[in-house]
Image 1 (cartoon, rainbow, N blue to C red):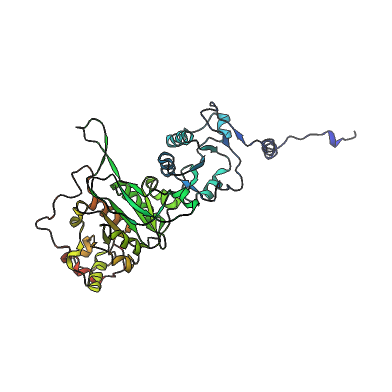
Image 2 (tube, rainbow, N blue to C red):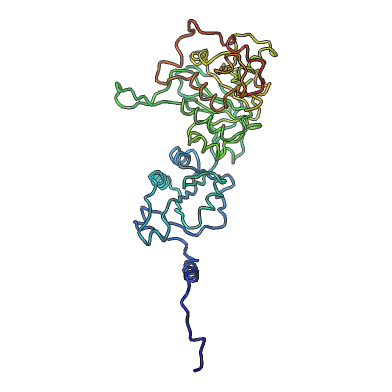
Length: 419
């Protein structure tokens, strides 16, 4: 019997069948879930090699808290939202898929309401999403948006009353592109709090009865620390963050995620010359307080010949915002504040520790706090409970141990450590 090989057919293996299916879908990489197209965006299963930015000023914001805050606060231009927590095609066909994270549904809702192009992704997208987030956890959501507004300023202007709901700044000259992102208004709104007092009819938005309070970050190069500082500052009601751009980390996507979204809703100001900025601001009645490790404070006192009364504890600063608008200056993790910045301080604030306060040798060598932890403690010290009648009502506390006496024995430690 003559054989005719051309008429023979062999069953295709699984790899060949899958290859044919992928080829059939090569020109159609999106499909819809079993919902109305008006309520559910499409799902892409084949990722491109890269994702180009919509504009040169775009960046990827990632992490559920940061993305949701960016959508809700509306301070950025929003372009595209990528959501990965979509069931894959096999799970859909077999009816097996885990329920979606409710947070992602909320993010999609706010994205659609903001008019953002929402793209749900599956298949081989995870590797690309990881690249978009720089290898950091993104919680299944990445938002392409413009950069956060960071208003460049020459100085802060005088504040007439602690009851003013804003303060004003002198804005630097900007290019058209910079002004489009940062804005041009020199009016900075004050932080408010929601009064949850059961005696009030509803939760009223109120302004704390105090002068404005801001943080100056000088030389803090770790983006995670910058984000953590912003988170604490926002939580306690700081009115603005002032960033020295010459020697500090930028407010990047890493910092925004570390802030848990707080960076999206707190005014961020920048200066290229913090010393000149402080001189301009000092003429308008603002006071400056340098945050330092106890040993560094003693060393600075000796080298600058300052009086002992200028070294303050957390208890000493409670009433400062009843007197004048204030800026707390935070320096780098290893070297602290620049000398030219440190010399502008009206006072130094320290946080004595349990080990260093005893004067005993510390074998572990821990003579300071992380700068983000220290900033949280000091923000709480200056601001206190916003629903109280003020940050601090008493100007003195009887029986208080002198801060200088508390830390004088620490001067033997390295004075360059930050907290």
